[in-house]
Image (cartoon, rainbow, N blue to C red; front, top):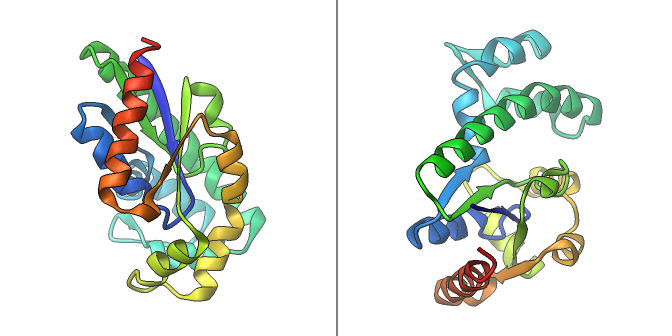
Length: 195
Protein backbone atom coordinates (compact mmCIF):
# COMPACT_ATOMS: atom_id res chain seq x y z
CA UNK A 1 0.00 0.00 0.00
CA UNK A 2 1.32 3.44 -0.94
CA UNK A 3 0.98 6.08 1.76
CA UNK A 4 0.49 9.64 0.52
CA UNK A 5 0.79 12.71 2.72
CA UNK A 6 -1.56 15.51 1.65
CA UNK A 7 -0.94 18.96 3.05
CA UNK A 8 -1.31 22.66 2.36
CA UNK A 9 -1.57 25.90 4.25
CA UNK A 10 -4.88 27.30 5.47
CA UNK A 11 -7.24 28.24 2.65
CA UNK A 12 -5.36 26.38 -0.07
CA UNK A 13 -8.16 23.87 -0.78
CA UNK A 14 -6.76 20.80 0.96
CA UNK A 15 -10.09 19.51 2.29
CA UNK A 16 -11.74 19.76 -1.13
CA UNK A 17 -8.75 18.00 -2.70
CA UNK A 18 -8.90 15.23 -0.08
CA UNK A 19 -12.52 14.60 -1.15
CA UNK A 20 -11.30 14.24 -4.73
CA UNK A 21 -8.83 11.55 -3.68
CA UNK A 22 -11.65 9.77 -1.79
CA UNK A 23 -13.94 10.02 -4.83
CA UNK A 24 -11.16 8.44 -6.90
CA UNK A 25 -11.21 5.40 -4.59
CA UNK A 26 -8.42 6.19 -2.14
CA UNK A 27 -8.72 5.56 1.58
CA UNK A 28 -8.43 9.02 3.18
CA UNK A 29 -7.54 9.87 6.78
CA UNK A 30 -8.53 13.37 7.94
CA UNK A 31 -6.33 14.58 10.81
CA UNK A 32 -8.57 17.63 11.40
CA UNK A 33 -11.63 15.38 11.77
CA UNK A 34 -9.65 13.27 14.26
CA UNK A 35 -8.89 16.38 16.30
CA UNK A 36 -12.57 17.38 16.26
CA UNK A 37 -13.51 13.90 17.47
CA UNK A 38 -10.84 13.95 20.17
CA UNK A 39 -12.17 17.31 21.36
CA UNK A 40 -15.41 15.47 22.21
CA UNK A 41 -13.68 12.39 23.64
CA UNK A 42 -10.42 11.39 25.31
CA UNK A 43 -8.64 14.74 24.87
CA UNK A 44 -11.23 16.68 26.90
CA UNK A 45 -10.01 15.94 30.46
CA UNK A 46 -6.36 16.32 29.41
CA UNK A 47 -6.99 19.72 27.81
CA UNK A 48 -9.10 20.92 30.75
CA UNK A 49 -6.27 19.99 33.11
CA UNK A 50 -3.68 21.84 31.01
CA UNK A 51 -5.92 24.80 30.11
CA UNK A 52 -8.59 25.22 32.82
CA UNK A 53 -11.90 26.67 31.65
CA UNK A 54 -11.50 25.67 27.99
CA UNK A 55 -14.03 22.82 28.08
CA UNK A 56 -17.77 22.69 28.73
CA UNK A 57 -20.40 19.94 28.74
CA UNK A 58 -17.88 17.22 27.95
CA UNK A 59 -16.28 18.93 24.96
CA UNK A 60 -13.48 21.36 24.21
CA UNK A 61 -14.68 24.91 23.53
CA UNK A 62 -12.55 25.68 20.47
CA UNK A 63 -12.96 29.46 20.81
CA UNK A 64 -11.78 29.45 24.43
CA UNK A 65 -8.94 27.07 23.63
CA UNK A 66 -7.91 29.22 20.66
CA UNK A 67 -7.86 32.29 22.88
CA UNK A 68 -5.65 30.41 25.37
CA UNK A 69 -3.08 29.15 22.86
CA UNK A 70 -3.00 31.17 19.61
CA UNK A 71 0.03 33.43 19.56
CA UNK A 72 1.56 31.71 22.63
CA UNK A 73 4.33 29.36 21.50
CA UNK A 74 4.69 27.57 24.85
CA UNK A 75 0.94 27.01 25.17
CA UNK A 76 0.82 25.62 21.61
CA UNK A 77 3.63 23.18 22.46
CA UNK A 78 1.72 21.99 25.55
CA UNK A 79 -1.45 21.51 23.48
CA UNK A 80 0.41 19.67 20.72
CA UNK A 81 2.06 17.37 23.28
CA UNK A 82 -1.46 16.33 24.33
CA UNK A 83 -3.14 16.13 20.93
CA UNK A 84 -0.46 14.84 18.53
CA UNK A 85 0.04 11.40 20.16
CA UNK A 86 -3.75 10.86 20.23
CA UNK A 87 -4.07 11.84 16.56
CA UNK A 88 -1.13 9.61 15.66
CA UNK A 89 -2.81 6.63 17.36
CA UNK A 90 -5.97 7.21 15.30
CA UNK A 91 -3.84 7.55 12.16
CA UNK A 92 -2.15 4.21 12.86
CA UNK A 93 -5.53 2.53 13.36
CA UNK A 94 -6.70 4.00 10.03
CA UNK A 95 -3.60 2.70 8.21
CA UNK A 96 -4.20 -0.77 9.65
CA UNK A 97 -7.83 -0.75 8.51
CA UNK A 98 -6.89 0.53 5.03
CA UNK A 99 -4.22 -2.15 4.63
CA UNK A 100 -6.63 -4.86 5.85
CA UNK A 101 -9.27 -3.68 3.35
CA UNK A 102 -6.81 -4.06 0.46
CA UNK A 103 -6.47 -0.35 -0.33
CA UNK A 104 -3.68 0.30 -2.84
CA UNK A 105 -3.30 4.00 -1.94
CA UNK A 106 -4.06 5.61 1.41
CA UNK A 107 -3.99 9.39 1.78
CA UNK A 108 -3.14 11.03 5.10
CA UNK A 109 -4.66 14.53 5.08
CA UNK A 110 -2.37 16.27 7.61
CA UNK A 111 -2.40 20.10 7.78
CA UNK A 112 0.98 20.29 9.57
CA UNK A 113 2.65 17.42 7.68
CA UNK A 114 6.08 19.05 7.37
CA UNK A 115 5.86 21.05 10.60
CA UNK A 116 5.42 17.83 12.62
CA UNK A 117 7.92 15.74 10.64
CA UNK A 118 5.18 13.41 9.37
CA UNK A 119 6.65 13.40 5.85
CA UNK A 120 9.01 10.69 7.07
CA UNK A 121 6.01 8.35 7.53
CA UNK A 122 4.74 8.57 3.93
CA UNK A 123 5.93 7.46 0.49
CA UNK A 124 4.99 10.69 -1.33
CA UNK A 125 3.99 14.23 -0.35
CA UNK A 126 1.28 16.16 -2.19
CA UNK A 127 1.09 19.90 -1.51
CA UNK A 128 -2.08 21.84 -2.30
CA UNK A 129 -1.32 25.45 -3.15
CA UNK A 130 -2.83 28.65 -4.56
CA UNK A 131 -1.78 32.27 -4.85
CA UNK A 132 -1.57 34.32 -1.65
CA UNK A 133 -4.44 36.47 -2.97
CA UNK A 134 -6.71 33.44 -3.46
CA UNK A 135 -5.68 32.07 -0.05
CA UNK A 136 -6.50 35.36 1.73
CA UNK A 137 -9.88 35.70 -0.03
CA UNK A 138 -10.88 32.13 0.89
CA UNK A 139 -9.83 32.39 4.52
CA UNK A 140 -11.33 35.81 5.20
CA UNK A 141 -14.64 34.62 3.69
CA UNK A 142 -14.94 32.02 6.50
CA UNK A 143 -17.43 32.82 9.27
CA UNK A 144 -15.77 34.32 12.34
CA UNK A 145 -12.37 34.75 10.63
CA UNK A 146 -10.53 38.04 10.76
CA UNK A 147 -7.17 39.31 9.55
CA UNK A 148 -5.44 38.94 12.94
CA UNK A 149 -6.55 35.32 13.41
CA UNK A 150 -5.55 34.49 9.84
CA UNK A 151 -2.07 35.94 10.41
CA UNK A 152 -1.63 34.01 13.68
CA UNK A 153 -2.58 30.74 12.00
CA UNK A 154 -0.37 31.44 8.98
CA UNK A 155 2.58 32.33 11.22
CA UNK A 156 2.40 28.82 12.75
CA UNK A 157 2.56 27.19 9.35
CA UNK A 158 5.61 26.61 7.17
CA UNK A 159 5.71 29.06 4.26
CA UNK A 160 3.90 27.85 1.14
CA UNK A 161 7.09 28.28 -0.92
CA UNK A 162 8.95 25.90 1.40
CA UNK A 163 6.14 23.32 1.30
CA UNK A 164 6.16 23.44 -2.49
CA UNK A 165 9.92 22.87 -2.49
CA UNK A 166 9.49 19.74 -0.32
CA UNK A 167 6.60 18.30 -2.35
CA UNK A 168 6.76 15.32 -4.68
CA UNK A 169 3.54 16.55 -6.33
CA UNK A 170 1.76 19.94 -6.46
CA UNK A 171 -1.92 20.71 -6.95
CA UNK A 172 -2.71 24.35 -7.69
CA UNK A 173 -6.34 24.86 -6.68
CA UNK A 174 -6.39 28.45 -7.92
CA UNK A 175 -7.34 27.22 -11.42
CA UNK A 176 -10.69 25.70 -10.46
CA UNK A 177 -12.10 22.32 -9.43
CA UNK A 178 -11.70 20.58 -12.80
CA UNK A 179 -8.00 21.46 -12.96
CA UNK A 180 -7.55 20.09 -9.43
CA UNK A 181 -9.42 16.87 -10.37
CA UNK A 182 -7.15 16.36 -13.36
CA UNK A 183 -4.12 16.90 -11.11
CA UNK A 184 -5.39 14.26 -8.67
CA UNK A 185 -5.94 11.79 -11.53
CA UNK A 186 -2.44 12.47 -12.86
CA UNK A 187 -0.87 11.91 -9.43
CA UNK A 188 -2.78 8.64 -8.98
CA UNK A 189 -1.55 7.42 -12.38
CA UNK A 190 2.03 8.26 -11.39
CA UNK A 191 1.65 6.48 -8.05
CA UNK A 192 0.08 3.42 -9.67
CA UNK A 193 3.29 3.05 -11.63
CA UNK A 194 5.20 2.77 -8.34
CA UNK A 195 2.92 0.11 -6.81
